[in-house]
Length: 33
Image (tube, rainbow, N blue to C red; front, top):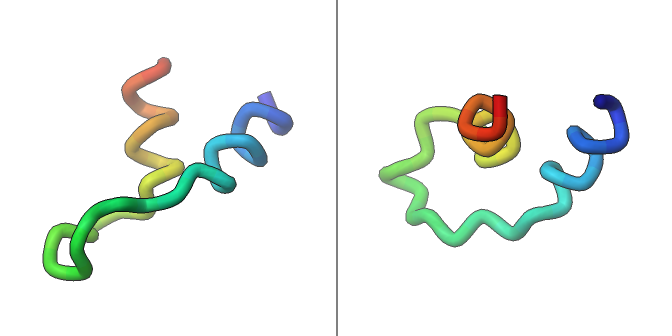
């Protein structure tokens, strides 16, 4: 699980600053789980 989180943190965040309520890696982790 830890390596998955590390990989998700490397994903480039394409969202605008206005739309960033949560870090992208957390959003992706919730979607995967």
